[in-house]
Amino acid sequence: GKVKLIVGGAPVTEAFARAPGKSGRKVLIKATVPLESLTLTPAAGATLEGLALVRGRVMRNAETLCAFKHDLALKLTGEGRKARKLVYETGCVLPPGSYDLTVAVLDSATNELGARTTTMRVPAAAAHREAYLGDVQLWARDPEAVLVAAGVTEIGMKDSSGKPDMMPRSERRITKSQEALLSYLICPPTAMPGSALWPINVKQAILGEKDESVAKFGDLRIIEPPDADTGCYQISNLLPRDRLGSGIYTFTIQVAGPSFPSTLTRRAAVAVQ
Image 1 (cartoon, rainbow, N blue to C red):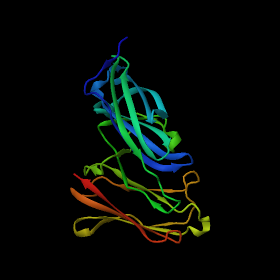
Image 2 (image 1 turned 90 degrees about the vertical axis):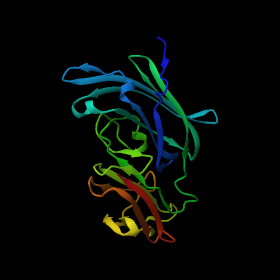
Image 3 (image 1 turned 60 degrees about the horizontal axis):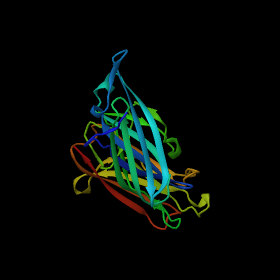
Image 4 (image 1 turned 180 degrees about the vertical axis):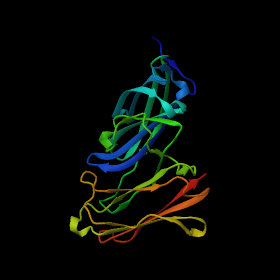
């Protein structure tokens, strides 16, 4: 049958650079569509079911460097019936650079299609094998979302379907009642022998007004090798719900050790509503 393009129904697409791989940077691609744009029908046991077809590709200079194709079988039960949006995640390994990302979501019942093409940039993890402290990414649980992750094993994650899980956000913004993760990379110089790397000392804190400390994460003393594939450490800190009041906070990181010529520092704003 004919495919009808949904006006204004294009998925919201985002890309998140994660650890470097042997052939490029591991990138998580995320697409969000409203569930009201998909056909969900009642099934046994108060379940809602539907099927969404997701197709996409990452291109540069008319060359496709990554393509993905997944059929997402949706089954919403219990609290999942209250969800308002579908979040789809997949993964690609890409060299640093700028790309065109195209994602299309087709409702198999109505043949209605939403599609979007955006520009995405994959930054280099480190230059000239130097020590690297990555940007801070915020991951949070979204009670209004149904998450389906497919094809993410290549970037070191697990495929899942319909389970509540942490999802990355382009903005470091959460509500007081949301559980969240603050995650970042530490990559020591790859040319240094392992024994010369350690210890790596990491200090972390969350600051409020006038840079007063309002929450501390335990200091880290790293004395183990980094991930064999990426050469980096992925550091994640759980921020429990109702830990912070409304306001703007600053997450601070200090990294020092024999493999770092000087202390690496990073500050990242986190908004709590």
